Image (cartoon, rainbow, N blue to C red; front, top):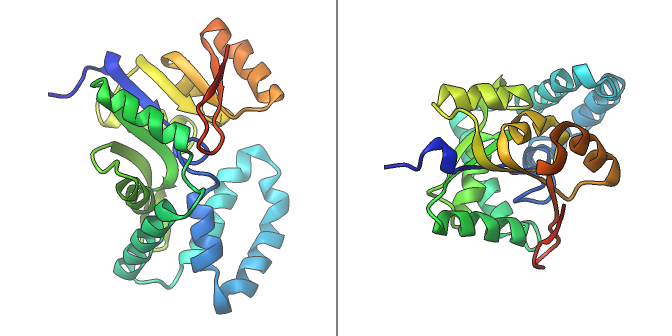
Length: 226
């Protein structure tokens, strides 16, 4: 039996368990490598002004993704993502050790842990498997060939969770991004990770005294602030 929703703990992925943007790293190191590099540069130049408009950023991200993946066989792409994720999980300094320890602490306590991320599913799953979290549930973005069919970002995360029968409130939620305010707001204990003062101030206005902030650096123990 799984734990009830009241014992559910939600973790973001990029910036909470893994340093950087996993799918962005895949695009830069693999999808846009070699002969595709000039195409990548041209795409970024054209899309950069659009990406400055918050409402259009998801569209710009989907466009860059599709340009990087177009022409790839779906099975080959899946294999590439799996290999890259396994390598990323083993890369020195890439995994945020306090975040990994916190997930293990929740698992040991019997909590239902769900990683909810905008990262592509195959890639995120490969990283989680590589760092010993094969049993952790994952809700992520989905691609079909070169096309992004689900961009699991912002409010879409709530819809995706609801589609899997996971409804608020959950006990704890960890994220480094204000795009996850719907996730954090639905938690009894929202935790903002590695946030700057401006992010903390905005989150505090919306979440009040429930908000906890933590700084997770390298292999150190987490510094907790309220």
